[in-house]
Each structure stands twice: as C-alpha cells, then as structure tokens.
Amino acid sequence: MSRSSTTTKRSITKRTPAKKAVARKTPVKKKKAANKTKITKAVRKAAAKITPTPIVKRNPLGHLLIEKILRESGFRGGISTSKKLLDAYSTDESIFSIRPQVVIQPKNRHDVEIATKVIAKETERFESLSLTPRAAGTGLGGGSLTDSVVIDMCAHLNKVGDVTVKKKAITFTCDPGAMWKNVEKKLKEHDAYLPPYPASKDICSVGGSIANNAAGPDSLRHGHCSEWIQSLDVVLHDGHTYTIKPLSYREFKILIKQNHEHSRIAKEVFALISKNEKEIKANKPETAKNSAGYPLWKVVPEGIAKFKKGVGTFDLTQLIAGSQGTIGIITHLTLRALPIPENTSLIALPIFNLENAAESISKALKYNPINVEIFDALTFDLALRNPSFFKDRLDKSLYYKVMFQMYTTYHVRFRRKIPEFIVLVTLDEETTQKHDPIKIAKSLSEEKVKARLVTNPIESEMYWQIRRASYTLSKFQDKTKRPAAFLEDMTVPPENLSKFFVRIKALLKEFNVTAAVHGHGGNGHFHFYPLLDFTNQTTPALVEKMSEKFFSTAVKFKGNICGEHNDGIIRTPHLNKMFSKKMLNLFKETESIFDPSDIFNPGKKVNPRFDIKSSMRTTN
Ligand SMILES: Cc1cc2nc3c(=O)[nH]c(=O)nc-3n(C[C@H](O)[C@H](O)[C@H](O)COP(=O)(O)OP(=O)(O)OC[C@H]3O[C@@H](n4cnc5c(N)ncnc54)[C@H](O)[C@@H]3O)c2cc1C
Picture 1: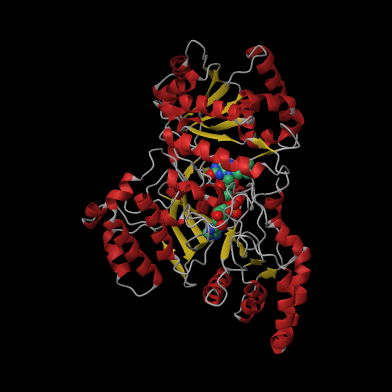
Picture 2 (picture 1 turned 90 degrees about the vertical axis):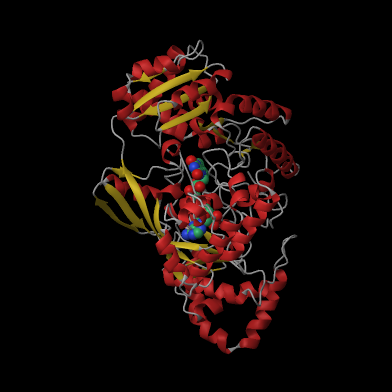
C-alpha cells in the first residue's frame, strides 16, 4: 500500500536503480583505496553540499567513508547512497520525514555483525554515525527513521523457517524480515496462527513487530508479541550474536559467570532491577496494553526475592521486544504459536449512545472473549461511500455479497441511522458451550444497545472488512489532507472508555479537527487519526499543541499514550507524562547498559534528539 512498504522489498543488489550504484561502486573500491588524496577531496566537496539538521551536529565525512570501510571489513550486502533510495527510506507511516545518509542491506547475520562492529568503532571518530534497523517500514511513530545509516532487515533476511509441533506445543522460526503474511501462510498449513497479529499483518514483518512489541485484536486474551517469544538471536553492541531467552535462576547464575557482553548486560540489568524494584513496580502502567518505555517490570516478573528462590525467570527478551532497535538488532526468531480457534461466535453491538459503550464492553469482558473490537459511525459511513475500495480486497462474488450486506444493514437493520459505535465481540467454542450465545447477546443488551449473535458469515465478513480497513478508509475523508498518526495509540482502563472518549470528542471539536475512530474496545484502546494538511506551515505547531493536551488527558484517565505502536519520535518526548523522573533515568541506564556508545537508533525511547516540528513531513 504505502511507498515505504514497497520500498523495503527492494534489494539494492537486484533490480533497483541503487543496484547500479552498488554494482558500479564495488569494482572502483580498490582504486578508491589506492588513491586516498583524491577521495578526501571528493568527499569534502560532496560533504559541503549536505545541509546539517538543526538539532544534530553531523560529521558527514563518516557517512561518506562508511561504504569503503564496510567493504574492507567484508560486508557483502548492498550499500547505497542513491538519492531515490534515500528518499524512499525517509518516510514510514508516521508524520515524519527524515533523510538517512546511507542505506545498507545485509545479506546475512554476519553482515549485521560487521555493520555493528564498524559503526561502533567509527563512532569514536565520527560521532554522528549510528545504525537504525528498518523492517517493512509500516511503523506509525517514526521508529525506523534516521539521519544516519539505515540497515534494511527485509531485503535479504526474510526467510520463513520450520514449524515444529511437539505435544501440542507449536513453535516456528524465521528471519527478522520475514513478512507476517508469509509466516501466517506457513502456520496455516499446521492450522496454527500467531495470536498478537496486528491489523497491518499483510504489510509488516515479524521482526519489526517484535521490535515494536506490536499487538492486535486477539491481544485482549493473548497479549503482545513479546509474550510469544521462545528465543531471539540478537547482535549486541560488540558485534557478536547472542541467543537470548528466559532463564531459570540456575541458568542465570551460569550465564553471569561467563565473560562476554550478554553476561555483563544480564548482571547489570539484574543489579539495576534489584536496586530499584519498588520504583519499577510503582511505574508499571495500569493498562493491560503498553509499549511505552523499557518494561523493566517484565524482566523478573515474580520479583527478585522469589527468583532467587528458584521461582520464575529472568527474561531479557522482554526488553529487546519493543525496544525499537535501540539496544540490539534481532537476526533470528523462535516464536510460539497457537491452534487457530474454531467455531467462534460473533456478537455485534450497535451502540447509539456513547455512554453505554463502557458498560456493554465491561459486561462482554466477563465472558473472556478472544477480542472486543470497535469502529465508529464515520468509519461505517466511509465504507458505505467507498464501495470500490473493497473490490481489490475481495473475490468478485464475495465482494458483491459483502456490499449487498453492507447496504441492507444500513437501510434495513439500522434504518439509515448509523450507530455511534459498532462493537464486535468474538467468543470461543469453550464459552459458547457453557453459555448459550443468544443469551449472552441478550445479557449485553441495554435500552439502546440491541446486541445480536451474527449467524450469517457474510455479515460477519462485512463487519471485519470494515474494521480491518478502518485506518485506510480514514484516508478517503479528504484527499487534500492526511490522517495523521500521533494521537492514535492512547489506551485507558476499559471502564474509563466512555468518559475518556466524551472528553476526546470535545477536544477534537475544540481544535476543529475531525477523525474516524476504531480500536480495541476490550483494552480501552482507541485509534484515531486527525485529518491534517501537512502542506500547511501551521500544522507542526498544531501537532505539538494537540499532543500535549491529548496525552495529558489520557494519563488523567489512568491511561497511557502508547498502547502498541511504540514511542518512536513522536511519543518519546512525552514519556515524562507517564513515568517518574527516576524511572526515566532507569530507562536511560538500561539503554546505556546494552548500548554504551549509543550506536543503535539514537533518539527513540530515551534521549529524544529529533525536533518534532522541523522533522515533520511537508506533503500529505
Ligand atoms: C494500516 C496500519 C495498521 C497498523 N495496525 C497495527 C496494529 O494493529 N497493531 C500494532 O501494533 N501496530 C500496527 N501498525 C503499526 C506497524 O505496522 C506495526 O507496529 C508493525 O508490527 C511494524 O512492523 P514493520 O515490519 O513495518 O517494522 P518497522 O516499522 O520497519 O520497524 C519497527 C521498529 O522496529 C525496529 N526494527 C525493525 N527491525 C528490527 C530488527 N531486526 N531488530 C531490531 N529492531 C528492529 C525499527 O527500527 C523500528 O523502530 C499499523 C500500521 C499501519 C500502517
């Protein structure tokens, strides 16, 4: 769909214009090395043309020499500074546009190790060098954007490995750049799936999802991506690969006696948590979903005292997941999966009065649903007005059936009055065997909420098509504007959902901005993307003002600012609204234990360094 998602499929060494650049440059390498004076002159001349960003003092020389140094160190993948390619890597699905200096595409894990070693060494000479991993580039917070070196993890490292089924436990392996849809296909052959699938599963990678700690509809029951990790191979700052997994106390003690960086990091993180256990516990977000900060509370979940008695685990994968490439680069994954739930039942709740939403959702949660999803009247209206949008997504006959269903739902069932919200509740077979789903639907009904069991599969398909397309549909509101991702990830305890949303609606009105709303109702998690014109010079200031106001509101309702899309550039400067000063320092210490020279994706999660206003995109 997006430019960013298609660009990552390109390989510099194949097909793209960049290929030529690389192919041309490689044989010249020896000549270049032999003629140092000439290079220096050329490099200086080119360097003079590069305009530094207002915030970061860049030493362009480092970037101009990096290709030569990488090649001399044995890097075999693609390296490019082609303008076209750098432009393509300047944006993701966020509101930012930041141009990298160099794009590299490792051929294998060894290349990632070489790149890390080279950047770690060269930052001593050229301070502004850093390494930012990028997978499919569908992130909404600017996590994969950088003004230095991008390492594209999708171009070559994209293989899906084996699925293993042992005594009902399903595991599988894959490269970090394996696309979610390809993994899904492979798992389906074993009637299995990866439960925290994000709505972007058709366009994103598995590694990027782990690095963002993504989540989706079924996360209501099955949690974030981090909960499905068996082990991760990670290149740490010393350029070596370590297999990181949850450890028992005995295994932990063996690890910390060893002499390498994984051992040192484990020892130091353990000491940090032991010393600050109270503060960490006090700062644990109240919402079930969270991808803000480094979740130190999840590393020794049973607490230090119990762990020392052999209870629970010490699990650094919980810090790697959601770290947005700031503490290491994932090069291989072993994850768990589940059987695809069969014979599920869908209950649809049209909510005409917003006040009723929280109550109906709270009642639904008592039945342990697999998911509780919502979308608003504007989303349904956009679907009605843009039927052709669904043409590419559905087979011809299904398309006509779904569209017919959509119009009859509107004209007959809703009598041309679209409910303020539609809530979808999915129940599993275990629940519906215990409780009659028709009775459950009745129990969820209120005076103005007539919940129904959906028995027609076409009707069910129609609701899910609209829910899954909600973000893309919001782009049809006004083609001269962009649905802007910056307030889209706030989460509140579900009981506060109605009150919070009433306040959000008032604030949108105050700022004179419209936004279609959808999200994960069961988690009190709203996604909404205000329509803004990024060609307008006043937009950056408006974004800053709105962020300030809306994020403070979420925290007032005991919520957080970042349920699943992670901190990136947009939310990192606002983490002080959620966490104490001491906790923010613990995040910084954590980052620096893993990455002492700050080579990995600086400016995200801690130490914000990108100026929000001047880094903002200027096109819609
Ligand atoms: C239409 C749409 C719907 C979406 N729906 C959801 C949703 O339901 N839930 C959700 O959580 N998100 C959602 N997203 C956001 C995004 O798609 C997901 O977070 C996705 O999992 C990111 O995967 P990616 O491959 O695009 O990663 P990228 O965006 O390329 O990278 C994500 C982060 O991980 C880092 N990274 C990438 N690869 C590695 C690696 N190998 N090692 C270490 N760090 C790495 C990057 O530096 C970046 O900070 C949506 C986005 C869009 C456009």
